Amino acid sequence: MRNKHQISIYPCYFDVKRSRRMGRRVPKNLAVQRPMVEELKLIADILKLVYEVDPEAKHPSSWWDENPGRLLVKQQDQANQKVEKAKLVAKFAKYLIAVKKKKKEKEEQKEKQTHYQKSQQSHKKYQKPAGKK
Image 1 (cartoon, rainbow, N blue to C red):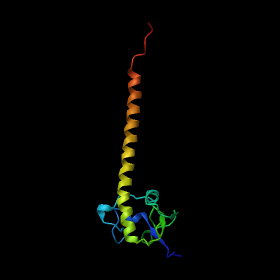
Image 2 (cartoon, helix red, strand yellow):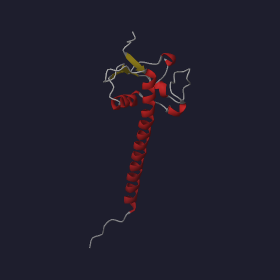
Image 3 (tube, one colour):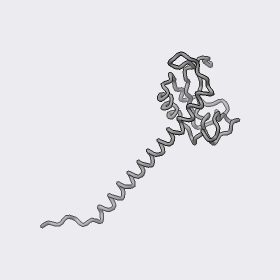
Image 4 (cartoon, rainbow, N blue to C red):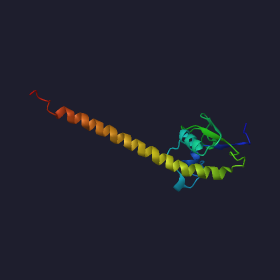
């Protein structure tokens, strides 16, 4: 049963590949590819929201989706003011772009490090062993 004091936020609200009819709630310029519940949790922590995660929930218009999960956010913030869902979704979208960008940079950095380490190992094979004097 739906709780009137919680706002449901599904990852599909921010998926660039979905149409508005299929559940996307933000404009395409604020949408990202493959949003995940874990990223939404990070954003909720940044915004200092009271939330709980429902990892098995699926959006009603895409019950077959392989990316399940939702965030149930308390409708009142820390100052006991009512939070509007549309404004909250817009905030999440702006932060989600930054989170995705940071995640991508970390992956690229990690890839560069592994590439560097592999190249160093391959160069060691061709170095002459230190000779005795």
